[in-house]
Length: 146
Image (cartoon, rainbow, N blue to C red; front, side, top):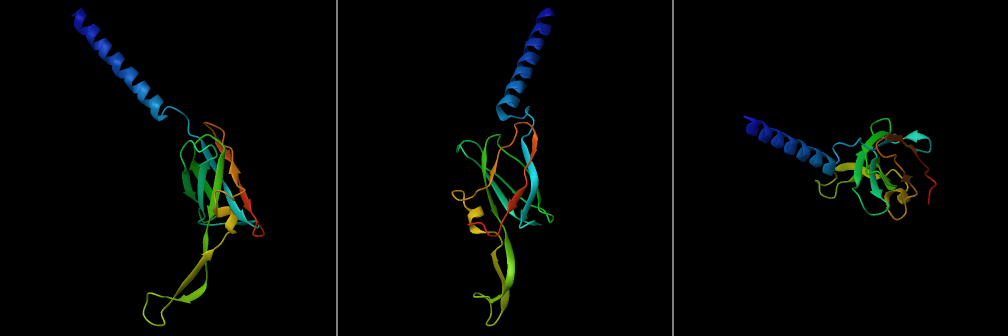
């Protein structure tokens, strides 16, 4: 009987250590690193903007999110300095549909943000999240940006 209990104890200990190692490897035991905030253009919220967060070092994962109808966003990120790309579109009138029947019109969609915000090499947007915490970072974009 003593042998069975010892074996059972070793098995449970082994399972417990394996689970702890697995959680440590995947990061499941760590608190999430999150960034949240508002994206605005010339002081007005930007709804449905796409945001991409790239580690400056090139090491780590890229994170993606979209703003809601009020320009708010929330995303889990790699805990390292990040470059941020922002893009959004808007309807700017009508245009003839090149693939539709003759004369059919469709919405003309254009970029709603200045181009420099949409390129990793050009974007001035950066984020420095605090590991294991929620960091608030608002992105105040300007239409006069080059």
